[in-house]
Image (tube, rainbow, N blue to C red; front, side):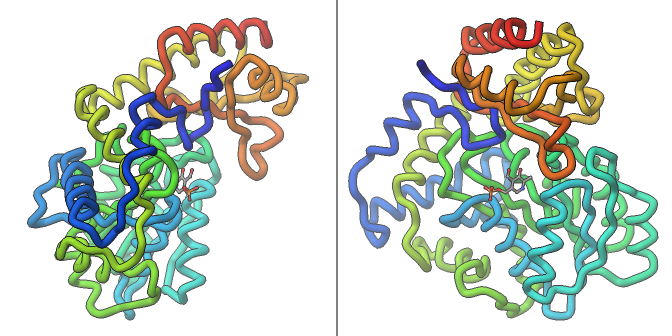
Length: 358
Ligand SMILES: Cc1ncc(COP(=O)(O)O)c(C=O)c1O
């Protein structure tokens, strides 16, 4: 039985992406690798139609956290300060990363699931000079899509650049790179783009990176070094060649299917089906549809049902759902719409949910 992953990455692979993993052996110092890397970098900018003169896509070998960490350590100048807008696990992780590197931060926290506290963010920016504000676009902890436009307007008003964790939104949600003061956006191959884990990337504004000055806090995660080397058709370190092949195939499928807006519509339609089925079964969503990403929705576990029971019953039928994190682990489960899921798979999922929860 084929297993369908409904966790927020890694995703169920298409046959084409899986086949790409067995591409030819390739040395990362050969011309064929350079062509692959150059193409990937071009395609990643094309996801949001970004001009290469202003933006660079920097490819890293690592998971999404590597990209987030590279962004924070490389963009904030030595004397800079970051305002971290938190309402979930991944906002908290950015705080932990900044602290670990001794980067000055201010934290503004909101409860998990709540919207960001815009008034508190505004007050923090008004009272203390900051160079950056770091925010998670889609807080995968709860499925909440944070209000980028409102946060961006605050940043613009205070002359602050945004550091965006777009790990679970890049490729599906709208990101207004052209109008928001975004310095960089960290993302990964194995979520909305449908590649495999192992490649992450940062889409960085070239002027914003230059404005960080000569700051170097990490040898492996120095975006300045990567950008210079990748612009020069090289790489500072060995890259995960096979996952590059997979991302290349995934991006070809992504553009053939209509690109970012179409990917968002596809996920929205899938989530609407799952949500309607669960609502019909009396299962309550964590957030209203307009507050939630198209990528993942959280749901309250029905009275008297444990996560383990629901997970195991679905797994036995070929579907992997995802637990809540931290304090939500006892009462929440999450379902994501990413990956190679057919209409038939979706119909089977709805039947399985009815069987188990009906
Ligand atoms: C918003 C967000 N940021 C960062 C990460 C971390 O990514 P990874 O587990 O690939 O390091 C995740 C993973 O789910 C995420 O959803």
